[in-house]
Amino acid sequence: MTLFQENDLRRFTGEPMKLHDFMSEFVVHCPKCDGIAIIKVPGPYDNNNAILRCNDCHFSEKISERTRFKTTGKAVCHECRTPLDPDIKDRKEIPPFVKVTCPNCKTINKIAENWESYMMKYNDSGIIDPAFGLPLWYQDEVRGHVLWAFNHAHLNEIRNYVAAQLRERPLGKLKMTMVDKLPEFIKSAKNRSEVIDALDRMEKKKV
Image (tube, rainbow, N blue to C red):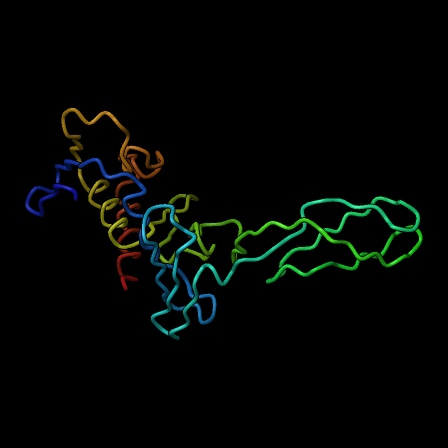
């Protein structure tokens, strides 16, 4: 919790809040209706137990429902010994075998493959949550940079830090906090007004 007084907007005394302290909840765009959805995680980085619920269309999904399987090895054609590369993925269950056509002799091979599991994200890149891969609800642009927050508490911590002209750290706290690691475009005093305006726009999207 940040020590930041409304009657003393010049001073920010940040407690040692790390980024993972804000990673038990992610506010995202629903994959079904693009409305506001909340991802709950039991603990930081415990993404295997994440649960998604939409406030608008009431869509819900457990991360375990997005478990998929893919092949992990190579094989050779049973007829002509041509190397086969059965690159098969997005299977919800592991089949007893897969059929792979040889590119050389066109023989259809039944391959008993090795498989590994993975979580199929909605997106693999962009400003997304680390579990489902959905676009974060709180994001805006400042001077060509994307400003984002996982949730309202995270947004509020950033805003308090940016609004303060005097930034202090508790004595004896040597490890880097979340605000210490913010990008320079957020920390820069010359960008303060633009960053606060962007954060205010994000604040208006509060759930």
